Image 1: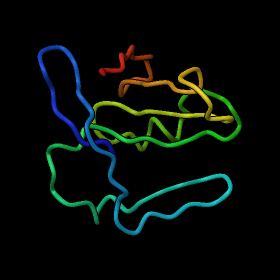
Image 2 (image 1 turned 120 degrees about the vertical axis):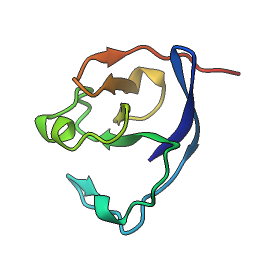
Image 3 (image 1 turned 90 degrees about the horizontal axis):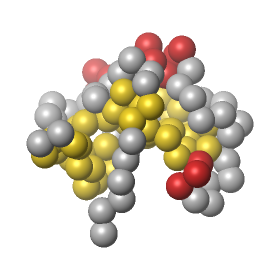
Length: 98
């Protein structure tokens, strides 16, 4: 889960939180939505695609939570293996703040 806040026309992410009772395997990860705390600072989720495919799947879009989804892909070496998407699957630009 990605925690942060809205500031004008941008979202600022300042914390990553592992959801309670999350599970993972070689080709999936999930968490029970009903176990999430009521926390309005959660603005999205992040997960990886080990296949290297940097696009959200239909399942990703159907289980979208928050305002953004971050997907990382193998080999996880640089920002080239990172993409951010809105709820409708459109690509969202980002900038790293120092």
